[in-house]
Image (cartoon, rainbow, N blue to C red; front, side, top):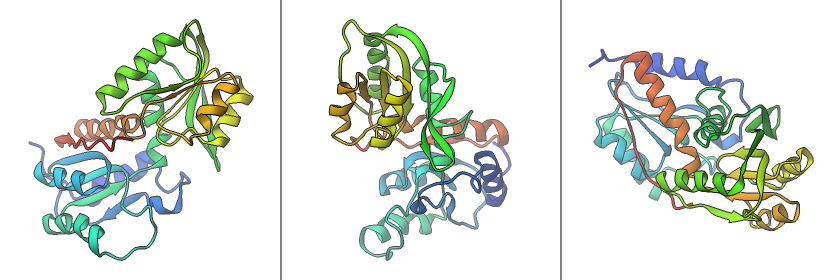
Length: 260
């Protein structure tokens, strides 16, 4: 087993790797170290959400550091009472540090959810997609494959990651030649307008507003909703593997599908 590492060394590495201080995000994301600890890091756990189940799972593996995509504070400032206290109390008791990386992980060119999911589906990105402030959160590209084949790939991936595929729009007899992909809640109105302007014929997302399943097909875009959770397991797993390769730290993925 590798020698234990000071927590701040791992945090500095992640901050630099993921450009935590440079990538814009929603205020509640609070990217970076969210819960400190005085314990050295011998084992890492990764998960999609900083939920009670994931925190408990991380503690059960003996991890000193939990890295998640969705951190603790989406609701903004809140009292540490009731469910929030019950979520955090075991982490304090175990000395578990928690690190969150939302959009910095989504957009990373090597470990990002979007680029990795595209490649897992056999798609090669050639451009960004899904503008948010100064960045493109998602990816897009060109292909020439039967949309039914792509649907099968997305369904297989989603099922393996605890999700389920919902399809809106034509599939049979259609070919996907221009695609766009944004993991998580990527199918927004703005993203759909961007897709239509780019001539996208197939849009892959985790989830989206109800009206996108109506508007997309009317714009000639087949919408593939593969699940918010399922489309965002891939980035944290890549970070876990990267830290194992870089520092020799063993890691575990804590599965806790949300059903969405």
